[in-house]
Length: 266
Image 1 (cartoon, rainbow, N blue to C red):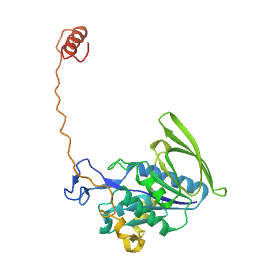
Image 2: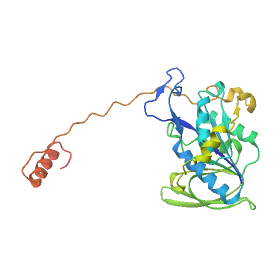
Image 3: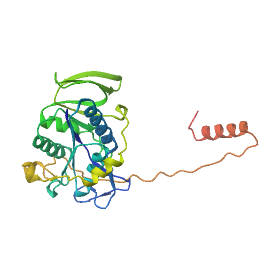
Image 4: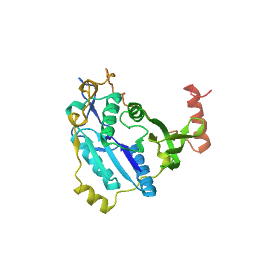
């Protein structure tokens, strides 16, 4: 099985800063982690490689510091990793990101499955995975909570998807792209041997020139959407009042009277 996993390095903090001119996150100097949903995608790819054999390649687009996320994926068991990094990629929205990732996947070549997390915790759009599938013109299976069967010879896959009404069983031909949810597995911890290997591995960096992409379709220039305004919600103000009484019953009565007076209950 030839599997490709698309991951993203996200800020390991809620105190993020925004570039006022570009409307994009300022990632320099901010500690990063693998997007939590993407760790489930890595784990699922590794489990099926262990069952069927093959290779798992992990890719990400980001600044040079994103190489640490790729090294962590290698420490988990990924065979290869590729960093897509170029100033021309900066400021990309989900459309431009999907276009760039798809170009990298074409350069990698043959694959059976592409694994993605259901969404990134910094953007929460859930659009990049489906966007990559659209760019590559392959089927997409989203919100996958279980891969029921995978037949490489017949080029077929059957999965269970989480939907509002419960679960949905669907089938697709290969190659295809799937986005996974947390229910699908429990990601493993990197092993000592894996960590040592990740420290020695040479991770190539591909630029826009390497991918031979259209400069008008990448980065900020290739992004049809713009962030026009960002505001931080005001901090929640709250206060606490303790009902003093001689018994629990009296406290309950006082609380009920207070709630009625505030018209919280009637």
